Image 1 (tube, helix red, strand yellow):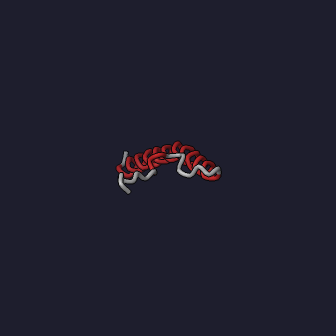
Image 2 (spheres, one colour; image 1 turned 90 degrees about the vertical axis):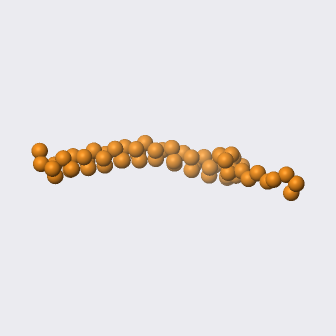
Length: 60
């Protein structure tokens, strides 16, 4: 095989892998956004993730 054929084959495989990863993570991202909007609509802002909470030092 020619070098350009090998490069084209590798490019097609890499593109397919990137597309597969993107399509498999898309539902997760959309579900997270939907859940955050739903909880914010019910007045529970930030309830979807606790890592955004701010901890104040004692004595304030």
